[in-house]
Image 1 (cartoon, rainbow, N blue to C red):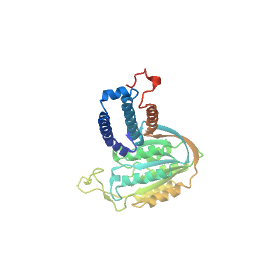
Image 2: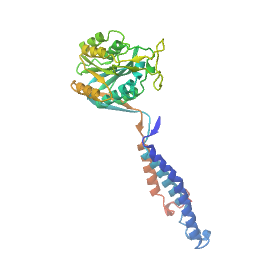
Image 3: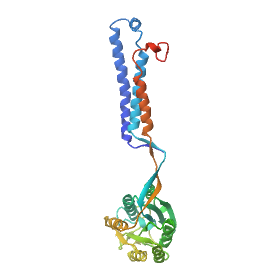
Image 4: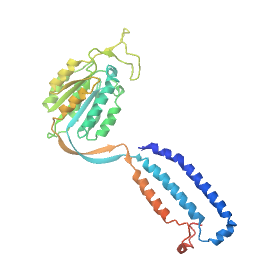
Amino acid sequence: MFRFENPEYLYLFIAMPLFVVLYIWLNIRKRKDVEKLGVLSTLKMMMPELSLGRSYTKFWVIFGAMCICIFMIARPQFGTKVEKVEKKGIELAIAIDVSNSMLVRDVEPDRLEKAKQMLTRIINVRDQDKVALVVFAGEAFVQMPLTGDTQSAKLFLKSIDPNLVPVQGTAIADAIDLCVRSFSGDKDVDKAMILITDGEDHEGNAMEAARKAAEAGIMVNVVGIGSTEGSPIPQSMYSNDFKTDSEGNVVVSKLNEQMCQEIAQSGKGLYVHADNSNSAVRTLESELENLQTKKTASLSYSDYDEKFDIFAWILLVMLVFELFILDKKNPMFKNIRLFK
């Protein structure tokens, strides 16, 4: 993949043809001024050391250097950059509900997007942690294994939508078990889980799974998202039509707050209700701050690696080359016909 970090500077290329036109116009004027002094062929014989070829070469080298400079300041990026970074944090597993009921718009813009916004903010603040990402509906899957690369975690988070898990339902117990298995065996660092769901169509014994996680030293925090009054479920992410039952009645999804609270209590964690404010995020951040951290080293990946230095070296070589191109022929190299 290739991109420019600052592509707005590429508009400077619009001016480059004007630069060429200006150079040609100045040369025409200079030629006319010289012709006023006499016949051009005779004047050339009177100035044998003058080299028009060198003058043209100097211009095109400068022109090329200006083009390279524009590429450089536009910051070209491509490839993947891998860095070894040292961090001091906890291990954090995030399980996010992607069932169709998460498309309900009783929080803005909808439950799923609100959940992604909250988790992105938490990952930004907790950028020293190792993070694992699990998605679930009727089944649970590891979207991203435990890693210290929080940039990748945010990219995976952006790509989440209900199509990732075609089986509908809310398999919270499976999600908790999968999160538990995502943690490392390191006993010197605290481990926590954030489960974000509306609790709709709850399946399995989630309280028992949360209790086992707590016994393993993993704190299970639950974010209940949505309203207890409920709202209709859209047909799809961008649809204004709503799902109906077999009798044609609009299906309404409500937050199962009691169940969410019981899971958090069993997991010895915190329950927070997510609304249109940021209070739930702040409460979670404060809770996670109390956990024991550990210094770890991990690899960090970025989609794009800065390549402006390549163009900077090319620019330097071209400018040095331009310095050695004189308007007059050097007597030491008069027999070398590189420039006529």
